[in-house]
Length: 108
Image (cartoon, one colour):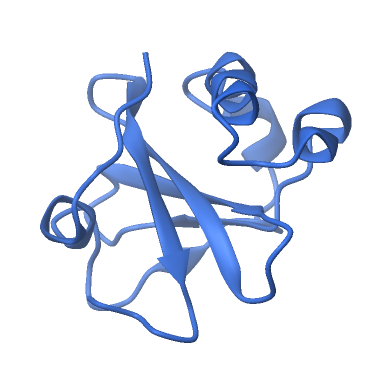
């Protein structure tokens, strides 16, 4: 089941500095805490993401907040500077939801 987060909910999962985990050694062994690809498939079916993201398991970036409580997985869309961010609750080891992030017009 998809859960689109509000800007306030999304902002609550962030910290002042998010750490880029994309190239952290060992991340491939312990990440993700939850398999995101069934959720991504639902986003594709709902028309939120293009199919190629699911078909090719494309991840633009992986970042983690400073409290080590949330991961943000940025997935590309067909629109420039617009990403779908899947938020993982690391303590619960589950997907909290997703947020459509427009880098051109951030509302957070």
